[in-house]
Length: 335
Image 1: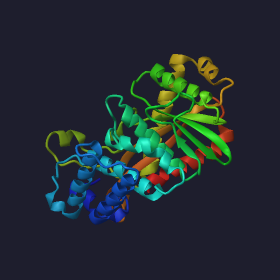
Image 2: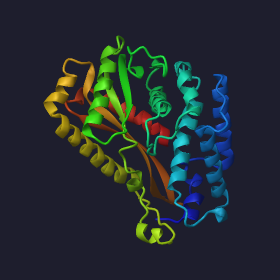
Image 3: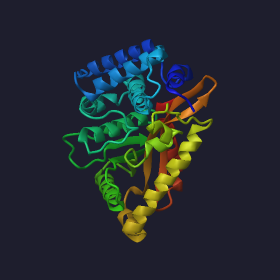
Image 4: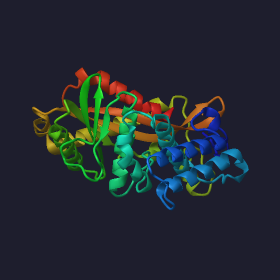
């Protein structure tokens, strides 16, 4: 557990993000990468706002005396770690042979919410497309052939992402869930299966569900003295020796509960009928981004989590190897 000055001080020492000059340099390289494709960072955009938040937070990292000891720092750190994913990956992979196909999605970084590890209240088309971009960028580590369907002029004959992995063309339909009912989840699943089936090039595929709006992010990184904090005490933020194990247990419970809800509301026979004879695997990948606290030799520090869970309605064992590779690629974002 920690108070604000400690967690700010330990941020860069634990390699979660860099020092202020380093992150400014990375953001400069990110900006230059976007300019290569004719995309300036627009004044007043959420992307610009996220950069200013990063600068403010990194300033506190440099001078912990300006920290408010009663501040709930979790929102700010989620934003920093969320934007860090895009900064690192885009700068690192901008010269990939498939990267130029992402330009229409890159323009949406100025229009939607970039960070994925917080809830968003209303469906935003640009924000949904940015999730597709994040998933596609991760796949660049697995494939030289990654194609994003155009965000505004899609013809309906492709899923959101096509990627050739180990010689097989995969289709990925990326969906962000906004409603709480099992039917809403099923409707998104159905739409994704139909997208994959309509793609002539796809040989196999799966629906990828973004659980950002289903996860209780404060449970992943709780304030230990919540009642006292509400009455004016300084917050004590949880930190764990093995944060991935702590979060994995909670995420598994969330995915299991949602899975059971869908089965209870729709019925397993009806769900299996959806997948019968289709290219889509009888299940889905649950992308679960969040943040938590971890103990380090320097003291408590924030930790980014990008977890991929699997929801199975049928047996997906034959494709487990590919799923594990995708999971590893997504984890590359949070190192």
